[in-house]
Length: 165
Image (cartoon, rainbow, N blue to C red; front, top):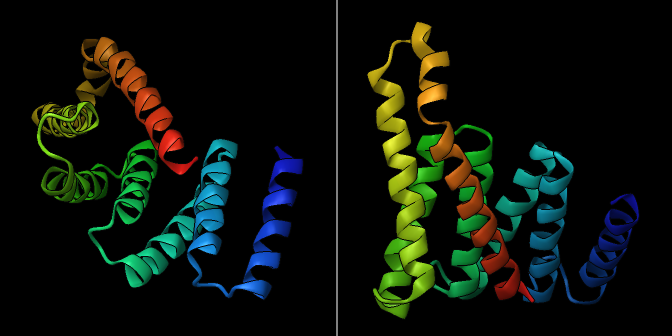
């Protein structure tokens, strides 16, 4: 992981020098570096890189371009992993709305994103229905849902990686 980070940083410096910090290829490397940071557990660094990539992609391609939306989704995944469910929900909903307009309602990836959003919303509703002192019981009640959500998250990560390749 350390060697991969060093290579990404080296590539990023070279791209920034050659093409500038806002070039779309540079932004792809920024996004990929964010993915690496997230996998390393460096959440603050991952968020900084994702948001940098998102701002640049919005400027270069606009807020409705699929590459921009992939980064929106990545930010949503990060927020979800951090327990920032309201922010994750906003990102998922933003991506879903535009994906539906661009790719149609029957696409498997859109259906999967809808499931992710519904699961996130259901989890937020369930947690708001239980008092803080019952949180251990809630965790036991929804443990199978968490396993399902982790499997879904892995599927979506695979989808995102396919899109980035």
